[in-house]
Image (cartoon, rainbow, N blue to C red; front, side, top):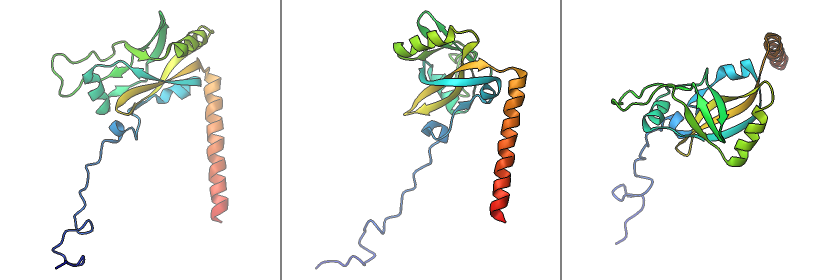
Length: 180
């Protein structure tokens, strides 16, 4: 004798309780940046950008997942055909031991040789430097976005702020006119 599908004793996919999966940390999942250098766009004109890998130790990756990374004073340096990240602060891992990493050690950035050649040519121009813009996870690996940057003068910063305020006021005026 066949059982009816409407019988509650027969398990079906509709009767099974949905197993709620634990939400993954947005930083680890790549939905949110692990660290963002907010002062970079304020202090520099950012032009070309490159995504590169970072050679890290295990405790450094775990600290970045905890949100203990800071790029405020960091910069990039091209030396002997390799690119390095200097002054990037990654705090100690909370559950680390005596083998924990040094907080502001020099870290190697991983790029293709053709990209490094472009960086060498670009940074030789007067006034240009490499600035890390953000750290984030992609497919479980830490990536760093670096930008070719030229320093701003004080009057450049004021002009940028004025333009930002003008755009903000224009958007507010458009929103007011649409509401009426």
